[in-house]
Length: 139
Image 1 (cartoon, helix red, strand yellow):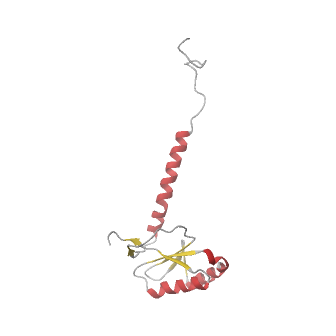
Image 2: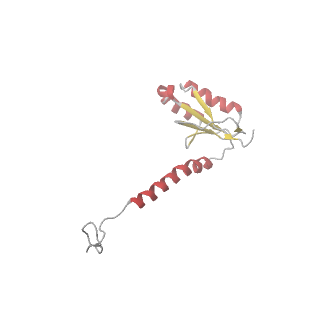
């Protein structure tokens, strides 16, 4: 018995379950999901973004708009008419001071359609805009 330390037998059963490896695996899967989810969502709406070498990553995007090459407007995941968009924007006009609108317009979309959306956002009190672009590879 002189070889054992701590007073327990070497033949004692371990009765506790170690959940640390399970938590590690779940956290890794969560991180992978969080990284891939925006990529999957962005590819769901077919928009060819223009490229720019001075683009920046958005910090916080509370309002996300997409304009397709056909001129349709999509707010988050909801495709809507211009009248429905104007009514919905009127509902958030009170909170517009600190919000930023990110506009992802297809490069084949009409310039006037983008200006129309920006004008509607300004009428709702949202004066901060960001244009979503793809970073070009070379300058």
